[in-house]
Length: 112
Length: 112
Image (cartoon, rainbow over all chains, first blue to last red; front, side, top):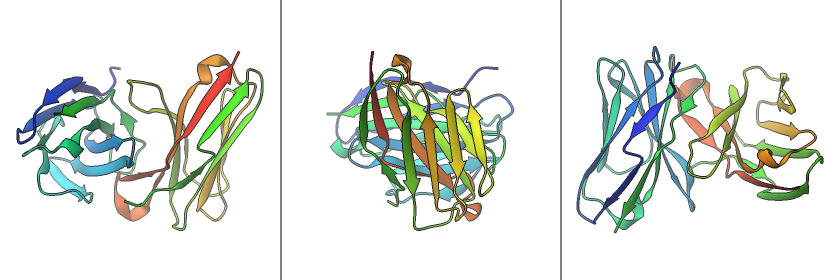
């Protein structure tokens, strides 16, 4: 069974731009969560989707948003990029919200 | 954001030695997970613990879910060079859906 896939793997943007990252969960998994990983803050929860509904949201500004499609694929969007948004963005999927999460390889975003 | 207290931050050991790391929290968690992350990749699940007091092994790895539900430890026996990486503990609360809270990570270096 294929693992969690994320595209693109690497991205360079400039301040003020917006970016969309994509995540395809493991086949059959309906819950998708997003995390931001930085050297200073570690792994921080962004949001969680299940059955196309946002179930949980972390402490991030409204510039960070996401959605989930009927096939469980998810996207996250960051608008008006800031230098501090440079990070590894990780997507994780699980069968349901209480099951063990499996992570994708991440998208490395660099904001210049 | 809230993080688990993970120690040690880093370890430098010789091949063949045993390793122990732990995570503590002021809050109760219902699930404890241990992940390993290598450069440029997402965290890979090593062990999942679901019950207080549970002791689970995965090859040379052994992890325990603390009785108080506020801590967990991971042991690696007879370390080998491919054990190098960053090890993260993560906890999930019953009321938090899929949301994981992560430790700061333990950077493990194994000298052959």
